Image 1 (cartoon, rainbow, N blue to C red):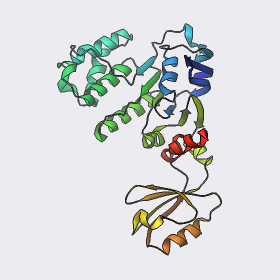
Image 2: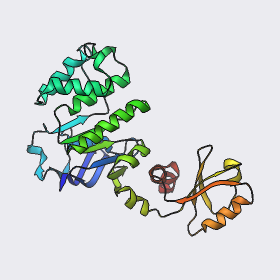
Image 3: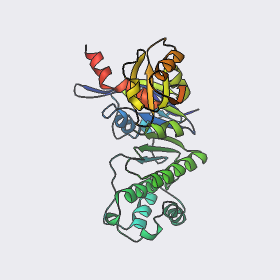
Image 4: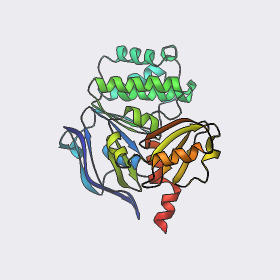
Amino acid sequence: MNTIELKNITKTFGSLVAVNDLSLNVPKGSIYGFIGPNGSGKTTTIRMIMKILYADSGSILLNGKQHESLRLNNIGYLPEERGLYKKMKVKDVLMFHGELNNGTDLPAKIEKWLSHFDLSKFSNKKVETLSKGMTQKLQFIATILNDPEIIILDEPFGGLDPVNAELLKDAILDMQKRGATIIFSTHDMSMAEKMCDQIFMIYKGEKVLDGTLQSIQDQFGTDTIRLQTEMGAEALEGIEGIERINNYGKQQELRLSQNIDHQKILSLIMKKTAVLKFEITKPSLNDIFIRIASPERKEAENE
């Protein structure tokens, strides 16, 4: 069963087509990732689901019902533009949001989540005294206090250090375990790879990818090699059959030309330097993102 269904959604702003004839199915209980370059239509799509914007055409269903006529009390929404009442105390702003969304057993839930995010000692502090990361955690708590059935998170990990990103990740997985369906928009391809049951990519308002990570990677074959050599990226320059070198310093990721023998590439590299690591693999989500949205592709489209 699908919790959210988008059917042929289009949204324009003047002459700009922000989202074009988009159809999506978000399975119940899944973590569904939205990826795409800035300005691609991710946030516009989310805002249409939230009824902040209305589609020019098409329809949106929530649990099989037209969402235009529904109250969205069962959806928790964390927008990219954070906003809390800065003069209110932490516990008061959470109580306000909880009551606004018809939450129950709020004092206990507030105490639990403040403890999870190491914010208990700030419960009587004003929001304006918190750091950016603390405020982000606070807004996440406000988003999920009423145990929403659907949780929509726009760039939830942006600006968080690794410790706090881990706390947020654990909270998201806990909400999924309780039965929530979660959509999150992110530029962190590694997090999308690790967490998402399905991934959707929008580019220039058009759906270009939609499926599990494996099904998406299968579309691009096994034209990728990850390796580490003594000389590094310098040894790879000028080798015929290597289409692109993504240099990470100690390790390189190579994209090969079509129908090139992996062993031939290995042999050519070994003539120039010692190979410490050589792995034939499918392209990462990060590499697939770059293939679709890179300046090189944009130039090719304009030719």
